[in-house]
Image: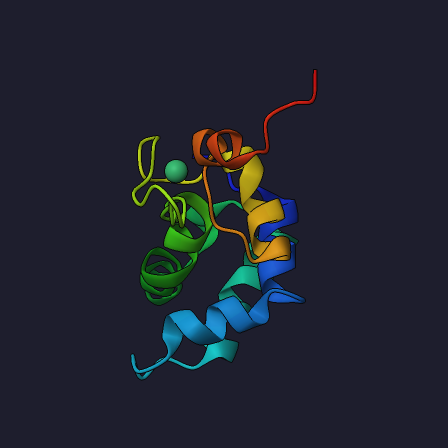
Amino acid sequence: MTIDLELLAYLCHKGAPYIDMAVDGTGYLPRTVIGVGTFLLDYDGDVDLLTAKQRVTYEKFLLPLLFAVPCQGNAHSGGCRGVGLIDADLLLKSYRDGDFRCRLCRTAAAPPTAV
Ligand SMILES: [Zn+2]
């Protein structure tokens, strides 16, 4: 899995509140997770360079935020129409907009095109 560095950079800076939410109640500090994220940014996302401890932190918090973000589906029709996860190329947009939906759900929710 190749890390989307642009997405990781977002999470370590503007998107840090998402990391705060992820660590909330776990006993981990947001700055620990951001530290691992920053390390990865410095090394082009090469997770092989992480220490065992950093790797645990990465897999526990950053991996899910980078690769496995659940689609929240549509308010009207309920569940996700896709596979339940947000498409990789829509993740950054999802975080920025606070709109956590996969492509299929976005398309389904889009207003009908005017003819
Ligand atoms: Zn969906």
